[in-house]
Amino acid sequence: MKKLKKLYEGKAKIVYQTEDPSKVILEFKDEASAFDGIKRASIKGKGALNNEISSLIFQILNAKGIKTHFIRKLSEKEMLVWKADRFNVEVVVRNLSAGSFAKRYGVKEGTPFKKPLVEFFYKNDELHDPMVCQDHVELLGLAPVEFLPHMKETALKVNSVLKDLLEGKGLILVDFKLEFGTLPDGSLAVVDEISPDSMRVWDKETGEKLDKDRFRFDLGDLLEGYKKILDRIST
Ligand code: UDP
Image (cartoon, protein in one colour):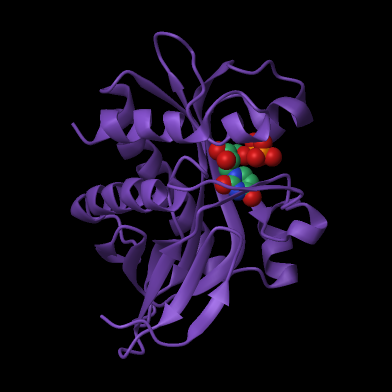
């Protein structure tokens, strides 16, 4: 599948048009960013790792009947996906307290939850991704509200699949972010990427943080953490 015009360039990925108007190519960049783009770095090899991890996870989800935009991995840094109308909402699922939840609600990092928590955020760096409720989503036109229950249900299904996958490999899935959109046939699908850039994963034995928090808080080599996740989930 040939790459045609660049349609969009974000912080971590570039979207290219293809000969087929219903399909686009995602190219993963070797760029890391955090704190709404304030902290940035170029990290050679990150794009390939995120493409590989994301492709693996999307394949597993597709096989479980969870609809995603993923079609196939094309090359080291590229995947072919269905073109989607992406919603301006980020859906976060949490199993343990961390990050903005720990800060906002004063719950110690690492505190496990009785059941997974699902939160919705307005995808907008300038506004620092404020948390939104269903009425905000409707009022601001961030996504068709009729999809919200299905998005929540899908996010919880993804959580259960990912949690089982990682737990079986000695890893803890702390939290992750999903994005949704509609495919050319109008159906709801998980879009974007699912990688250590968008989830928190800790080693069960040592508690070592293997995800983007390594970059956010200078905890250690980012690639080393991402490679550990990939090695565990691909064997
Ligand atoms: N996350 C993301 N993109 C964002 C915000 C959050 O991928 O714009 C992910 C983040 O990596 C973590 C989860 O969503 O795995 C929950 O993030 P949180 O709300 O705690 O925010 P953060 O600590 O990243 O500010």
